[in-house]
Image (cartoon, rainbow, N blue to C red; front, side, top):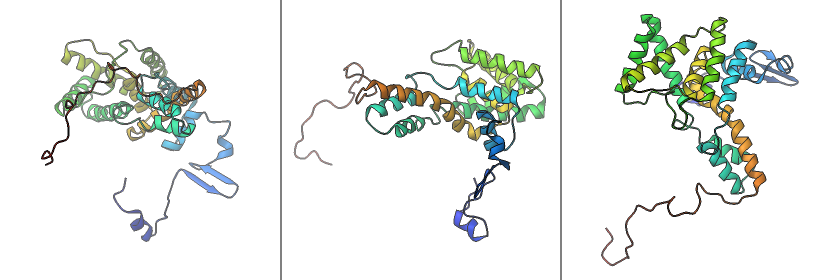
Length: 281
C-alpha cells in the first residue's frame, strides 16, 4: 500500500478510484480486459478468482488444483471458532448475512492466518534456495530464523489430526501435477524439508497440516501471500454459510459458547467483598 493520502494522489491528477481489475460502462463489463460475456460459461470459480486476483488466466489443470485447496478448507465443524460464531449469531436473531459475516470476521491471524504465514515463510525459503541451490540448507536457515524470532513455524502440526485426510489428498493431487510438469514442486519440497528439519530439531514426529500443504500449492501457483486470508475466507465461507443455514432451520434461541454448567465457566476473580467507606483510591 502506498503511504500517501488519497486526496494527495487525486490533487496530482490521479482518479479518486483507480483499478486495473474492472472496467464498467453502459452495457459493457470488462474484467482484466476480458468482456464478461466471454468469461461466463467458460471460466470456473477458481479461474475467475485467479484472474481477478492475479490478472492471468489459469489453465484447467492448475485451476483444478487451486479448487482442491478451496474445497479442502471448506469446513471443520463447530469446533472451529468461525463456524461456532456464525451459528451462535443465528440463534441471536440477527440477519442471515450478518450471521455469516460474524463467522468470516473471526478469520484472522490466529484462526485462519496460518496459511498466509506459511506462504510468507515458503517465499522466504525460495529466495534463499534460489541463491544457494540447496533445499535442505534453505529449510535449515528459515527454521532457525523463525525460531530465533520466537515465532511458531506455520503449517506444521495439528491439535486433532496426526494423519489429516485433507493433507494426504492434496499431496496426492499436487504430486501428480509435479510429475506432469504442470508445477515445479519446489515449494512442496521446501515445505517438506522444513517439516523434516523441525522434526530433527524437536526429536519427535511432526506432520504437515492443511495450512502447510495449501500454502505450498498456492505458492506453486504464484498467488501472493497477502491474499491468503481472503482466499481462505472464500473457502471456509462455504462451511460458514452451510452451518449458519443449518442452525437457522433448528430454531434454537440464544445459544452461547457453552452450556450453563458451572464446571465449564470458572470464576477466578476476587472473593465476595462489600463496599465500605475509605476504600476508594
